[in-house]
Structure formats: C-alpha cells, structure tokens
Image (cartoon, rainbow, N blue to C red):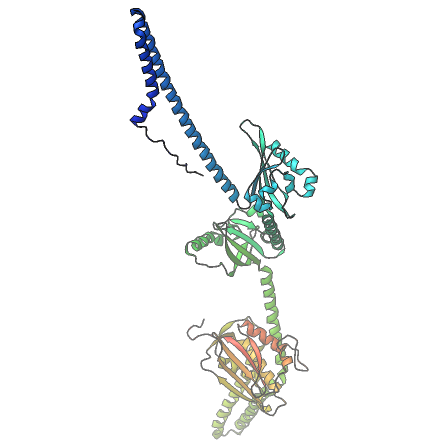
Amino acid sequence: MNFPLPQFDMPAPVTVAERLRRRIPEALATLLLLVSGLALAPLVSRGERYVLVGVLLAWAAAILLLAAYSRALRRRLRAEEADARRRADRADELAAELNLLIDGAVGYAIYTVDPKGRVSFWNEGAERLKGWREAEVLGRDMALFYPPAAVAAGKPRADLDAALRDGKLEEEDWRLRKDGSEFLAQVLITPLRGPDGRLRGFGKVIRDITEQRASERQATAAANHLRSILATVLDAMVIIDERGNIVSFSAAAERMFGYAEDEVVGANISLLMPMGEGRRHDGYIRHYLETGERRIIGTGRTVTAKRRDGTTFPIELSVGEAITEGERVFTGFIRDLSDKQRAEQRIEELRSGLIHAARVSAMGTMASTLAHELNQPITAVVNYVRGIANLIDANDPQDLPMIRESLDDTAQEALRAGTIVRRLREFVARGEVEKSVEHIPDLVDEACKLALIGARETGVVAEFRFDPAAGPVLVDRIQIQQVLINLMRNAIEAMAEVPERRLTVSSRRDTPGFVRVTVADTGPGVAPAVAEDLFRAFHSTKADGMGLGLSICRTIVEANGGRIWLEPREGGGSAFHFTLVHVEEGNSP
C-alpha cells in the first residue's frame, strides 16, 4: 500500500535585515576587540604595536570563524529536529493506518502476547470474534482463550514453545469465547523479535473456520455419497472437457467399457466410439461451441459404443452441460441397451407367436359358421352341375342359353367359396409385421367378410359410418383386420340376448396425426369394475374365454402407434375406440 506523505510547514525565507541582525553579536565583538587594540597602541613600542595588531586580527578571525561554525551547528540542529518531527508524524500516521487495517480485518482476531504469554495488544477483530473487550484481556494470560482440557494439558505454553522452536506455528484447534462457547480456529503464532534479536513477544492471528469446515465436511459427505451411488448404479457416467478429453470415469463405466479410470483420463472420448463416429465427435463439439446449436445436449439418443476388446454395443446416451470454475464440461450418462434389445427381440417373437395362436384360436370358434357359409356355394355348384348334366343329356339345342347361364352362376359360386377360403388363409397365415398405407373402409370391408359370417341370420344389423376426412392410415393390414374381427365378434356375442342388435363401425379424425375407429354395440354393456381390467391378459367376461383377445388387441394397436379404450355407448351398450396413425394424402411412404 502506498501511503501519502504528510505536508509539513516550510521555514520562511530569511531577509537581509534578519541576516544582519543575526550577525550583530559577532560584529560587536570584533569592533570591541579593534577598539581595545587602538586604545593600547600608544602604550607600546612601534615593534610591539605590529605584534598587537596581528594578535588582534587573529582574534577577530577566530571570533568570525567560531560565529560561522555556531551558525552552521544551529542550522544542522534545526534540520535534524524538523526531520525528527517529520519521522514522528509519519510513524504516527502509519501506526494509525495499521490500526485501522488490523481493526477492520473481518473474521480475524489479531493480538500479541509478551514472552510470558500475557496479552499486550488486542484489536477490534479479536473483540468481535471472542467477545472480550481490550480492557478485559490486557495483561491476562492467553490460557484464558483455551478450553479447560487444553489448559490442563499445558497447551498454551506448548504452542509458544513450538512457535519459538520452528519459527511459527500453524494449526487448527478449538478455542474459547467469552460466553463459554467453543469454535474451531485456524491459528497462526509468530515470534516477534527486536533489532537486537531479543524476543519481544508473539503475534497471534485467529480465524473462525467452524462453518467452513462443516460445509467442507458436508460437501465431502455429499461427494462420497454421490460416488457410492455412481459405483452401484448400472448407468455409466463419463465427464469430458470442451476439448473432448475424459476427466472422470465412473465405476459403472469401467465395468461397461472394460477400461480402468486411470487408463482413460486425459484420453479423447473417441476411444469409446467406433472409428467413424470418433473422428466426427470433435467436430460436433467445435460446432456447438461456435454456434450454440444443440444436437444431443439436453436430450437422449441411441448410439453405438465400443468396448476395450473392440466389440460394439448399443447405448442410450444423455448429455448434460455445466460450467465449473470457469471451464465447460459435458457429462454423459450411458445405459447399455444390449440386454434390452435382446429382451425386446424375444418379446416381439413371443408376441408374434401369441398373435398367430390367437388367430388360429379365433378361427376355431368360427369353424362351424364358416362350414355353413362354405356349404351354400358348394351346394349351389353341385346343383348347377347336376342340372347342366341333365340338360346335356336331353340334347335340346334350345337349352344352350340356360346351360351357359348356369355355368356362369356355377363359376360365381365357386369364386365365392374361393374368396372365403383365401380370406381365411390370409387371416391365419403368420408373417412378419409389414406396415402399409391402407384406407379404413377397405380394412373394415375385408374384416366384415369374416366377422359377419352368420350375423345376419341372428338378426344383427351392421351400420358403417366413415368420415371422408379420416384419410388413409399406416398400419399392418392383417393385424388391424384381426382387431376389427375380434371387436366385431365380441359385439355380436354381447348382443345375443338383447332384442335390438345393432353393430356400428365408424371412423373420424381424432387428435392431430391420428384417426379414431369405433366399434359399438347395443348389448348390455360392461360393468365399471370389469372395465378396469378388461385389456389385461387372462381376464375374460366369458365363461369359456381365455382372456387373451382384448389383450392382444391392445398389443397390436400399441404396436401400430395407437391406443385402445372402452367407453359406455350412449343409449346402452359398449363402444370400443382405437386410434391409428394418420397419413396425409401425398405423404404416403
């Protein structure tokens, strides 16, 4: 710190009159000496007179020299006195500023003790920290500030001895306040020596670090807790800097990738990526730092990672960003999707098998009805063939038009039977899921050819209401037909004991991007308690049902991107709704 020098009064300039006044005494002494010489001159001989004049002149010169020397001494004395005053004023100013600095030190107690440990100086910071006023502690032993156990162990004297032996003492220890409370203090004790090297006392600086150490312990405990969590969770955590270098590698990451932390810290993150991805990653970071455009930060995505042995595996990666001590870091949370993908593949295989089994089971329930339906065209074909044979045996040329018409009818009935068989084969056939753009009326029409077999004979009236705005949908055609058939067959069975049997199939626009299909009946409806578990597997309202039909319907609808639910129909009955992904005209894949 640069302290401004104090301003001192400069002596006034000396005038000519003042200078003459100061020389009057020596001028008078010289004149008196000359007058005395002149008075003695007549009393001596001529030779002695010359000697007397020389002596007088010598005395006059001596007087003048002594006067000049005296003036020089007085000037030097005055200069030294002025310099001493300036030094004293400067020392007072520095002492005042030092006291202000010491008293203004927030959080620090600064005081001194003599060689015997008695307090000789006490600043305001010490008063604020410990509670004693200066008058209460001056001259008292510093053991006053130690807990009783430390005093009994002789620690106050031991601290001074250690500071004297080692040049200083730095430690963290407990100290006492005036109110009896203890606090954890950071202590610095320094011996104070004079210019002659003699010990004059000790300077002590005390700082309360109770809250600081408590916060540090809490932060350490939190960090240890976080490390224990990261060591047990399955998700790996990798932290990199803005240059792409790894700065932290969790225990889960070690297990997942096969590297130890000390092997990868400082290495580029591309070490954990396939060769192509690794080369592009640094470019992604530079692009983000330059433009701020986020591609993966704050979101999750599925990417491919590489283990130590070179094998690759799918991972789900989520990246967060933070700025720590002015440096930007990126934290990646990584989940190995290998087991999940294998499980999903197995579930898909099981689901496909279950759906196929359900189709076969559904065909079993319709076998008798299908036999009746197929019997009609086959019987018609047989009758037509027998009639044509009789006409041929008659060999009447006039019967040729009738024979030709009968053959056409026979062909139509045969085609009808073939269509029924073909639809049955398509429905039962098991194949891979293949989505295509379909129109809802076409899906419903094909499903009705199987679902409504025999329904007209039981008095069921089918109504169809299609919204022209509910355009094409992206679905697996066979699976959605299975849903429609299941829902329509359930509706027909639910209306078996009611007088009014009306089946309604409709479509309309739903939420943006979806089309809603509704299959409604006029049956007795479904109780609310039953409706809650209606789509759960192995839960059926039928005495001989397996409870798989609606569960499979839900699985199919969700696999096609929609959802399915039940609502009571206005006027009685049930209404099953399910949504399908809508495809805008012209955007078909």
